[in-house]
Length: 232
Image (cartoon, rainbow, N blue to C red; front, side):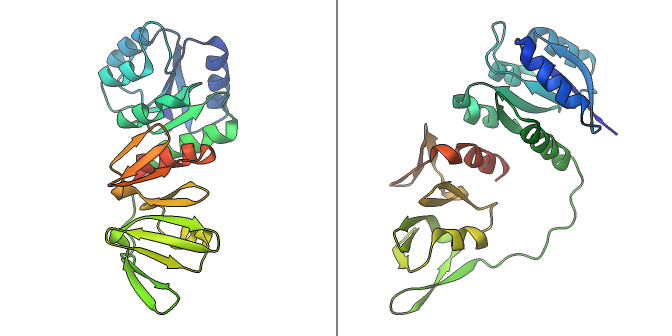
């Protein structure tokens, strides 16, 4: 059964683009589009079958964030905005994804599939993965427990693994760790850094704080980072 959705955006061109994308996907059924978010809220109260909202952020009557604060029901939200600085706020109010205008159809379908996967009954979980890795240093092989890792940093030919108690240097590259560390727990946020999602204390602009440590978020990794902390 197709997911019934609405579009809420005060820009007619944006509404047209998202509407055309929706019509290309048999998994979706467009109920209505709205230029006024207050009218959309009233419609959702009367039509609880709405399962997905494509929502703009900057609107004169009500911002997208305010819309999410007062909305009722269980409809998923995909934000469609020209401003990336509201991404963290959107995810804090349970947005499934955050699309930056102009939106490509490929990126649109990826966001929709997140909604579909989110609402698909999950199979039994696989056996638990190992909770440690072994790291070769200059003199020995060290066991490192994954829950102890704060972040990994590329240093020329080495990788520095910062744990809660020490820093370990190993003659490897960051890519090799990115391939083996679970993406649900670790995310690459910069060409030189991978961080443990559950060790993040706070995020300010493009800086991540992990206890006394600060890690930058690279421009090309912003979307990937916010998606990871939303799913983590």
